[in-house]
Length: 173
Image (cartoon, rainbow, N blue to C red; front, top):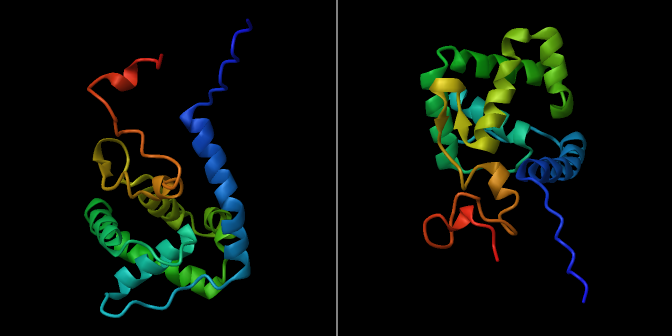
């Protein structure tokens, strides 16, 4: 009697990296082939509208959770004193130069280094659900962070344990 083959195991990081890479291909096509600017949302301040437009532009989504957007916006305002002026400056720079999202970071690094960290911060908030770094980092979303929303139809966020305390630490029989 032969032994059954052991299943192939890949780490969560490798899986998420591959999943994000696979998801970015259609996203890049969409960004490069369609208009990237959303219509302004009525009733929002100009800075908040710019943040909303930048979020849509950077993530490539047609719509984002408005409650989560508000939480990210308010937290970024609290953590970064120049956030409003940087968001407005970045939106103006993108609009004036008609930059594709795929080329944005390279262009900012070369031409606007003061604004270069902002797209990373916004994407970190939307995809990881975390605003800020180090001791000032604030986790605002986990289950609804875009990295988990992208795989929601097949995976549950790994923090949920479907058994008694400690069952996740034992190898299955």
